[in-house]
Amino acid sequence: MTLSLTRTAIKGLDDLAIQHDLSRSELVERIGRGLIPIAKPKHHQQ
Image (cartoon, rainbow, N blue to C red; front, side, top):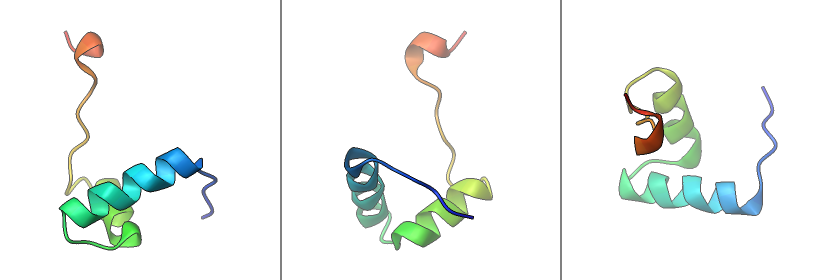
């Protein structure tokens, strides 16, 4: 699989990976497996 991301998105992933002490690739893997949950923005929550 190939993803195209903006520089801003890559920076955001890198920052999150550092916070979780993971590589960027491992961060994406864990998000995809549901091991790191993704929260909905507050304006979308009901």
